[in-house]
Image (cartoon, rainbow, N blue to C red):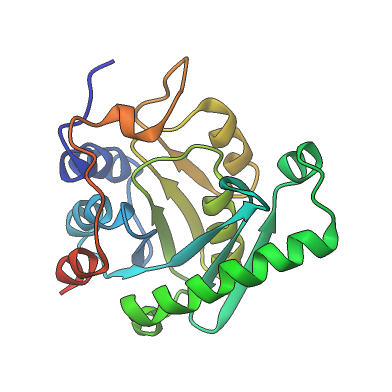
Length: 211
């Protein structure tokens, strides 16, 4: 499977797939930082839609921070918590351990919320909301994002990502109106392998893209 040259190129491919859905009711594009922002810039431009950041933070397992046992997401003042029952059971995380891990994640969520200015997001009630990231692995962070957005009563919730495993997409189809993903590798290993250039972005890079 051919790789995307970078996130902007992936966003252009994704934008074409989103446009193929047809008409939209007051579309709003929400990017999951940091990597989702350059992808979402292309989607928002294609839809002539406002772009904002939806801050999501992975909740890492105790002693294994790279393993997502859930996620937090914030839209305005609303914070949504998603707990992955499969991973929490697999690593033996009880309610108290999950709460402590979530509290640590919330501190970083608050920092990112201030860094990206998410309070400036447009009203989502009655809008067609398109949630964009540069790819999915487990899908935990995107599930938290969907839960947060649903609280604000949009007309539709659409998830659009350039690459993801089939398992993550199936979980999202159960809680969204539409899921768009141009590339679904049969043997998914990591999001970064779908890109020739997958450099990490700084907070400053994100702010520059949102100007």
